[in-house]
Image 1 (tube, one colour):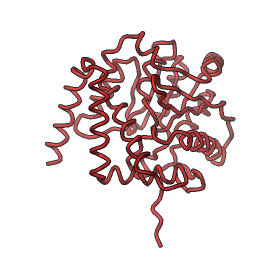
Image 2 (cartoon, helix red, strand yellow):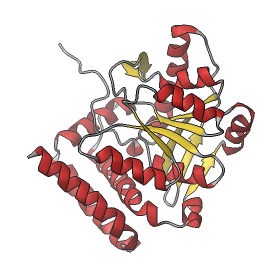
Image 3 (cartoon, helix red, strand yellow):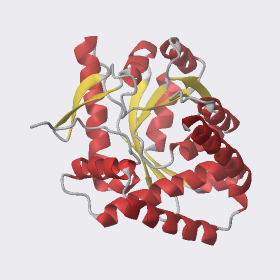
Image 4 (cartoon, helix red, strand yellow):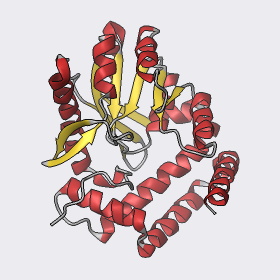
Length: 287
């Protein structure tokens, strides 16, 4: 059954990448609104996990309105990912605004840049924007089964990105080399996929986050820049933080990653509906 489901999902993505660009904007809004309401009413396990994540991220019980807004944001992102290969360069450019762009470009020109992001907003759109504006992106993607990784890696390569698997044992050294070849390394940095991350606090909650961004920055000498993507009514806005100071040793990696966590947590608490995290993130509290 799981193989049939996976095959159906892959077929759905392939069809979506062909047809999404032709769907009128008004129809997209209607579909997204209907689908988000239906998903919220069904309240499946992923929606329940999303509600818990949002509750902890904001410090209060997530309302039904916030959960539906988060599902609407997620589905908006899904549509954009499907339509993105058909967008013109001009449409990509006009749909992204970057707060702190000059500082990022200055750091990139001086020593290279590692940009660390959480699962917020449409980071693929931002990656396409970066590749179009002289900031070629190298990144890592979760290696899913059944050909999903190759499908999404191919999609991102068409946008100009270099994509590595998170299971690639040479990923760190390849990313360091990418910095030295004049590429920007962009890494999703909230979820600890392999369970070997660094202990940090997120609004007082103990979690683990991947060490990769801090390691690549230290080994390459590149600036480590936190970023969070958020929707405005018309654009994808990228909020860039100040470069994080490099620190030596394991304690230094923890301190650098804690600064990423602090930036992510603060920005996400301000606009939580764009944090599309439907997987367990915070530890379960046991009596």
